[in-house]
Length: 288
Image 1 (cartoon, helix red, strand yellow):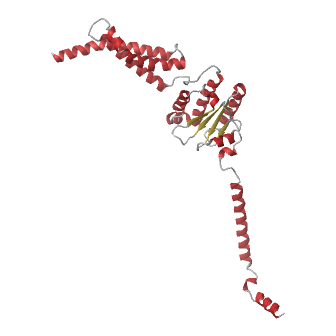
Image 2 (cartoon, helix red, strand yellow):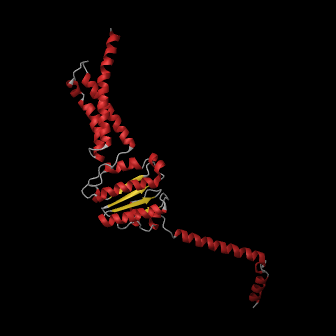
Image 3 (cartoon, one colour):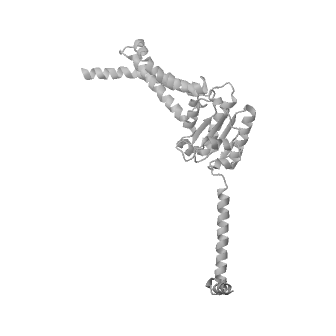
């Protein structure tokens, strides 16, 4: 009994058993409530998927980088769904600021197969367009076609002028055209940009000037077919390979671009025919 009384006395004499100040008790309650809210928020956040692709809905167009207006995203999704129904090819778009892994793409679209094309849009990259092409489409969608799509529509100048959404729509239009044509092997992009035509026109002019100069070699009024043939590898490559064929591949033989380049070539041949004798006479006078 003596020990029991000593314990009781000890507990009664402990200052911690004194009632707390009401203000301190309210402060502790607020701290406890704040801690509970913080813990609940942390648990809710950590329960979400780490990858944005894992949280997506599986629609054909997934804009996780906010590059597409809502109405454009909806219209493109409907369009790609119709394409899949008509052709069986799955064309998908993912806009993200981090290159996705293969596992993330599979989680986003579990039905991806060999006949699938994923267009990747990364606004933080130097060229905003990239592709993932299934093995079943490798014989139809060539690398040259994909590289030209990147070069024409994914470069920073086109994006600055048309925006990321304009680049995406242009790529999808060309890709859909390729997929819908069952017999077509896509090696080049349809249409001819202003930059491409300017380059082809310069090549046609250079080829014409070389051909005309070769014809007039010898300072004779008769064409010098020997030198014309000798220089044919040079002017032929410039005029035909770089001036005509790129247009024909995209627009066929009969079009304004082809006609314009042929006219440029002939005009430069005529100019060189007239120009070369004057140069030769000037050189002869200086020698004399």
